[in-house]
Amino acid sequence: MGYSSDTERYFCEQRALCEANDQIRPELFKELGVKAGLRDENGNGVLTGLTNISEVKAFAMVDGEKKPCDGQLLYRGYDVIDLIKGSTGQKFAFEESAYLLLFGQLPTESALKDFCDVLAACRTMPTNFTRDVIMKAPSKDIMNSMTRSVLTLASYDKMADNLDVENVLRQCVQLISIFPMLAVYGYHAYNHYENDASMYIHRPDPELSIAENFLQLLRPDMQYTDLEARVLDVALLLHAEHGGGNNSSFTTRVVTSSGSDTYSSIAAALCSLKGKRHGGANIMVMEMMKDIKAHVSDYGDEEEVSHYLRKLLHKEAFDRKGLIYGMGHAVYSLSDPREVIFKGFVEKLAAAKGREQDMNLYNNIEKAAPKLIAEERKIYKGVSPNVDFYSGFVYDMLGIPVELFTPLFAIARIAGWSAHRIEELISANKIIRPAYKSLVKKQEYVGREERM
Image (cartoon, rainbow, N blue to C red; front, side):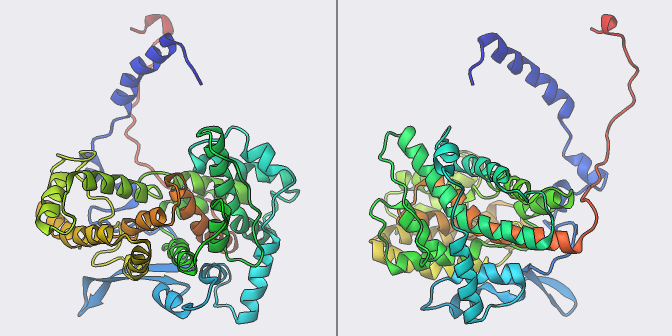
């Protein structure tokens, strides 16, 4: 949309009013006992609900004292590391975790087959939807494209507003099935119309897993290796859910609690996930890594790497925010279990792709960054690499364009969103309505003609 220079000037001038009247001093939060971002100064979250779906563990009670421990991520009580190890040599690891999150128990072989068959049957969209919706007004922001598609799908569902669990489950499974298509087709439309590249729309294969289908839908030749599919399958499993307290899952529950439909709830979650503070984190890691590679000549020189990382912390390099992206987590302290298990797959893929030198750089950053952050910052818990530190590197090795990094996160996380929506519908009976401490002071009304 284009505006005249006068209109642009108006918004620029009015910005000062917003900044003057909407600014809240940070110290007021502590003075008034308000938890900014629903977290206290030590990073502990304010309890806002109960869940049976998943748990994030970062601390343990030792002799009655709370102490940091290696992180754990449990889906319905099962450690994600065990879920990955248990699926070795088999595909559909992500689908198995989606079944577990949705239904609360691990599937038998026959139950998993039935679930995958249903997913395959649901992997279809309304007639001409790709042409009439996805290919219209293509956008570089694929998350926006997906959100628009999800909201439009409600127009094709005669039971869109029906909140019966059976119906909501149908809607969720259908969305889990077609999210890869919404993402990849959205990218191809953008790449064709905006980048003048060739357009190709492949059909999904009902015999393939979601990870396999994503790769064959994306690639012109539809080819991929078993290792590539396995690594992506694991990545999807690790991103499928994260404790319920993350921003997008909480958004799902907030919108669900109002009595809204599935499409609106999932669209709201997509809007939440696309933010740089949430699902866009791995993109920031990749941009930072490009900057590091441009300024570090020897990836194996730990001293040179550490020197540049210190410049990042001192706001002297990259985006001058003083951050080393991919380090630290809102909950985990000593380690992020997703990063711990994922790293082994990253190393295998790096060896297969001839990217050992890049892997060496990542290893050196992983060693040096936590020590430097501990020296430079006042921290209340340990600092360790999180899963975003490696996920962007993996997607790059798989030839996945950066525009699809966050959509790929959504393809995984919709399993968790769906589980939280269903749990909220079944177990909760109140709209989520947090309280805000008002700083408003009574003002005397001044007539329009008397205002200065």
